Amino acid sequence: MIMPDDLVAFDIIISGKVQGVYFRASMKIIADSNNVRGWVRNLEEGRVEALIQGRKPDVDEILNWCRTGPTKARVDKVAITELKADPSLRNFAIVV
Image (cartoon, rainbow, N blue to C red; front, side):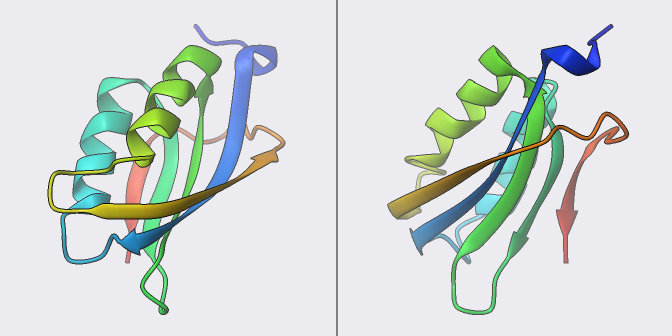
């Protein structure tokens, strides 16, 4: 069981060619396989935003993946903001 003190959380904004390239679906697969909770969504201006939360090594896997994304993506920038963890998050969702 993961204890609340073991959780880290980040809001991330990914810029580049990140919409229409299965970024959100790919991120959900990676998050689920790393036991990371949170959500991912497209923003109107062509960027992707995600909230990710979990144990630091698991979250680091997602952060590293975000720097390249799926095969057809081109990531130009990843802005990361640390947040307070929310232990009530239970899964990872694609927000529409």
